[in-house]
Image 1 (cartoon, rainbow, N blue to C red):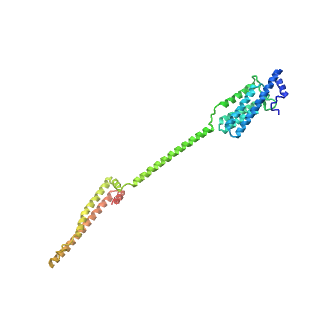
Image 2: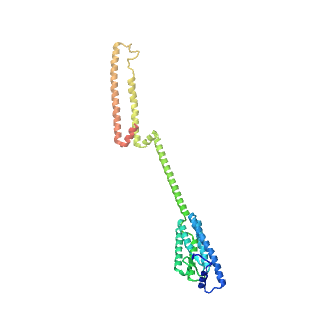
Image 3: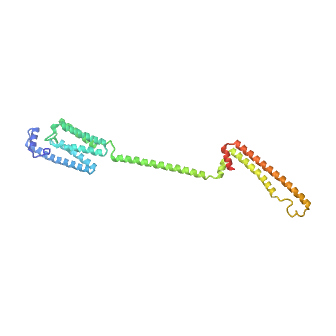
Length: 326
């Protein structure tokens, strides 16, 4: 094919004569040797590019990236160091594209944009400089002397080298995963602390409830008696209770005491005296019953008045607690 470098083709030597004028035999031989060397370098670039494509298929992106960068650098050496030797720039264009795609897969967006933009600049240069093409649209020749074409492509290769060595401003996939993992770990720690704090508060509340249930009746009574009003009403009730004890005891004694005519002396008395004593005991027993009824009525009235006074002088809540104590 015509886009392949063929050193045996005399048309190529004839074209060189037209481009460079009259050439000596030694010069033609030198060009012939340069063509042979360029042919080997061109095949080497092709092989490196194909190895990079295989590594991309195997998802070995870092190794593939190094292969494509190596292909670009060897193409630069082929174009700039050989005098008017045709080179296939399709490998440069495709290598720049693959580099941009690899950076895109690795989520390094700035580097991906750099190489895609650089590839577009190279293609615009090739299209805008048809005089640099030789024997087909895929072959490129750059004059060795300083000329606008050489200065322009040298600037493009310099930009390519800058992009290769320049650090990225985007985060790599590993860095992004590391940050995400740190964020997740921090969230787990915060959630664990919140759960521990909630458990601690729950335990404290449960402990307070248990302590409240375990309080004795005496503690409640003491707390109730802290109020002076409660203390006064309690003392009044205690006083009434103390007063009622001797009264109740005296009543009990009067009920259980035996009549004077009972016992061994009841038969020894005369019958007339016995009847007299019996009638006297009946009258005395009746008087005692009347006194007992009066005492009970007095005690009942007194307690009723006291309770009525308590109801009138204290709030409803205290009355309920007071009855609970009773």
